[in-house]
Amino acid sequence: MKSANRYLEREVIATLGGVLLVMLMVVFGGLLTDVLNKIARGKIPAQLLFSQIGLRVPDALTLLLPLASLLGVLLAYGRLYRDSEMSVLAAAGYGPLHTLRPLLRIGAVLVAAQIALAFFLAPAGRAIAHDMVQTMQRSVAVAGLTSGRFVELPGGAGVLYVSRVSADMREVEELMLVRERDGGRLVLTARRGTIEVNPITEDILLRLEAGERVDGRPGEPGYRRIRFETADIAIPKQPLDPGDDPIQSRSTRELWQADDSESNAELTRRLAQPIVLAMLLLLAPIMAQGAPRQPRYDKLVVAILLYVTYANLVELARVWAVTGTLPSWLGTWWVHALFAVVVVIAWGHELLAWRRGRMLLRQLGAQA
Image (cartoon, rainbow, N blue to C red; front, side):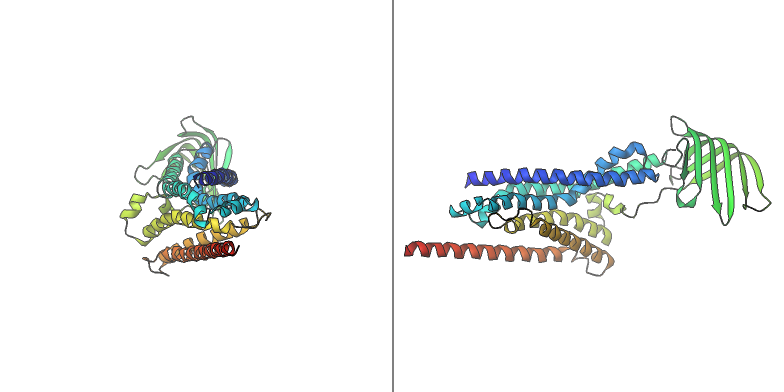
């Protein structure tokens, strides 16, 4: 039994490593595309490309690890069933519960890793990534002032051009701002400017020196031209992306001490992630069963649909708890309870079939 357990463990670990590596490569491509898109829109500076991707990997792993674990067990055990190795083990008395034993140690490590990711690493990565962007947002580069480039400021604040940015990213030279509102056009030019940040509100202020202002309506007379020694321009902050939820960046300690429904829902969501992983691992040995020479990948689609349904139901339950559709104390527990019933029924049916098969073999042996 120990040799069989070690053999199954090696098969699951090797397959799980390969599946997780492939999924990470796919997710890395998606993260790279998303971050490059934000860089192109001026939301993230180019120098933060790799740091932003690296800090978002733990958050992606919280979604990948349950699915990768389920697929790894299905592929590893499915190959053993297809090559009749499980039939040989069953003939030697290796029953359904024995197939679950190799997953206990692997599952304990995976659940512990998922807890660390969901409760600590993923929120910390989100918080650090947000702080890095906010810190860089105080600099000239993130505000849109890049040398030799026209940049559209957020909130319809206009289009800004700067010919040169100083090495310390705090001073600019030869800049122009064009802003259109209510059919009018405003053009500001200045020889130089400096960046100032309000330490309390963290608002970014561009102070222009030795400049000129021209405003009016295109095609109509009455343009005004004003020269100035100094002028201040407030640069709007970059708005948060719809997918960036600030509460997901809060630490678990802060969520535990908070008493609002959103904090409780976020805490429940993090707790649900290792539970989902454990439930899927319990169901995986039964899903992997198959006949010899059966196609290896026929159950992967079913496994992916099962995971997507489970994860979406958990998220839907969390939203219902936040909006008040369901009681906050119920949270996502009803989803886990339903899935636990499915696991118990599946294992009960499997153990009953195994017992009947053993009894039939005994009767045939007695008759022989």
